Amino acid sequence: MLDVRLKPSQQAKILVLINEFGLTPLDFEWTEEESVECVSVEAVRFRVSVLTHRPSKFFCSFKGYWVEFSPAPKGRVAHERHNGDFNQMVPLAIQWLTELRKEIAIPDPWADLRRDAADRLGQSERANTALEEAGKQTAASELREANADLSRQPPDLTGAVQHSLTALECVAREHCSDHATFGKLLQRYDGLFPKPLDRGIEKIWGFASEMGRHLQEGRTPNGEEAELLVGLATACCTYLARKGKPVG
Image (cartoon, rainbow, N blue to C red; front, side, top):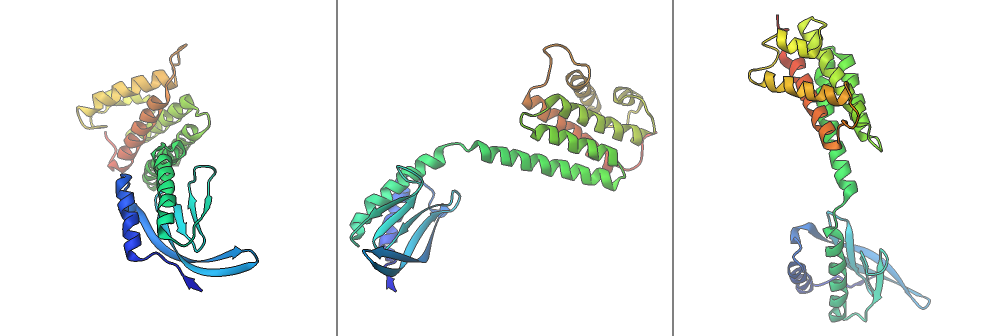
């Protein structure tokens, strides 16, 4: 096996390029691997250096006869020939860094969706755990439905608000041993939420009811409003579930 790994001085030159491109050096990692390359009918084995951009998984492999890199100017992967001279590899590394910088500069909406879903799921599961530990299975189920509605494509925004309101009202009724509406419970029980938050929660409830229950033509929640209301209802449910003694 032929060892064609880059020398430390050559890796240092690549580091200079990374800095010149305004990229973060600590995002990159050098590894080595075995490469089997065919020229004519002969297969040759090499020990080669590979530089990987860890956040994106894009890479540049300095092989025995080729530089293989992704992303590429045309297509996902490029294979460019060199004659073993590092000075021929440098322009290929520049091509790679040029494409890499373009690619990672583009916002990834799928990553944003995954992060939003994970954050929402984490908050929901913490609330569900608190509710289930307090024996409030119905409310926990309603919150799961609310988050499921938000995750649909397209999302059911009104359904999400309705389910979250149902969960909050269910928890408050059991907490107070009173089957009045949530709005009435806020008025009857001064200790349901700390003052002056109770007044703010009352206004939020009115707004949420208008968006999720007492619908008017042209008056439906947008995505940001629905997520806000579901999040607030989830937080209030968690608070009441962990509060302990019912108010009297």
